[in-house]
Length: 180
Image 1 (cartoon, rainbow, N blue to C red):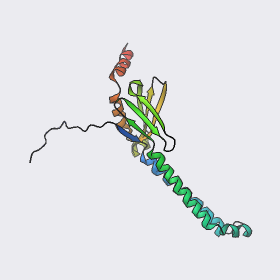
Image 2: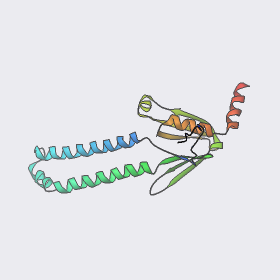
Image 3: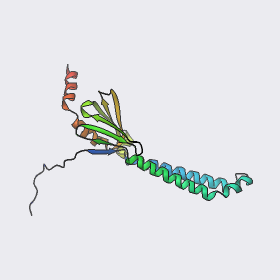
Image 4: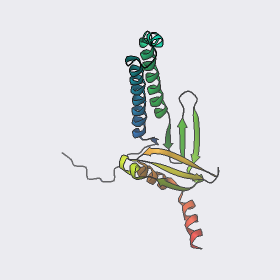
């Protein structure tokens, strides 16, 4: 059996997709579940404890099934919306540009050539370090504005990847200007 001693083997990838951290999808779904539970519990509390006058209480009880079916379908719709919004918003890092794509009904795309990026920095708080998310901020000198790769997972890894792809001539110019 031959042993592979070549330690320089690499995998070549055309581009990398980056999404918002799954932590926030789970957090949104958790909040949605909590809100649905609070609505259902409030409804049952009002009906079962005779807080509402008897005339309205009888009318409300006759719509129990409709209320819970509406709550069920609204919750399913919002769950699908949260998941589809997460799946359809992402960044693609290519060797020459960063592409931000979002939207599943109306599509939006923003392309940032790496040659136009003047600076890049990362913001990651204590919770971000613990749960593995943060924001990468890039400054596009051509558009004269900042672009935020908001709450992405593993931002340090992608920060280093983007930093390594930015043309060296731009960074060298900045370094030499600081020395003068």
